[in-house]
Image (cartoon, rainbow, N blue to C red; front, side):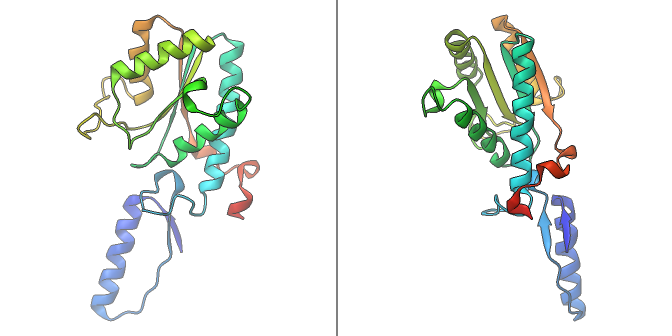
Amino acid sequence: GVICNQESLDYVQTLIRVARQTGYELQIIAIPLSNYNELPMTDHSLGYGSYAKYVNAYLRTFDTWLEANHVQVGICEIEGGNNGWLVASAALNYTVANSKLHSNEESLPYIVCLPEQPFNEDNFLSLVKNKVEKFGYVRVITHSQLVDDEGNNIEFTEYGSIGAYLGNLIDSLEYSVQVNLCDLQVQPLSQFISKKDM
């Protein structure tokens, strides 16, 4: 068995192919890393619950810091493959934490940017402005890669990250902005292990 990223999964496939060609009996159990899991119907594979738990704990801490420092727009970029399962798990945190307000996303102080949904700069800035005017602040949870209306990856290399790219867009609104990268490398700390992963 091996827990691996996409590159390692390619090696596993090569090993199996070579073993079959030579008549060698080989079985490999490959478990994709949850934050880069791009396989269909495996969003709840081993590790997903722990990653989601860590992301939500991180966002609560980030929220506390933003509130204490009176930052109007907090942007949290979450790493991942070509799917938004972990980013979507962050929306659960905000929905539960703010359930006393309303149950729909439009009435909550956050914006979720998923890689499966086309990103439009004008719509995004309009959402930010409306939410800051309504709540006094907004939290943006974004994937590390977004696509345009044609499905092409948005180019952000001059900014260094999608979070910085979004922060640069928001600068035109003259709001205070803090961009953070949710580093999933520290996730395996024991307090973030989900009961589902045990």
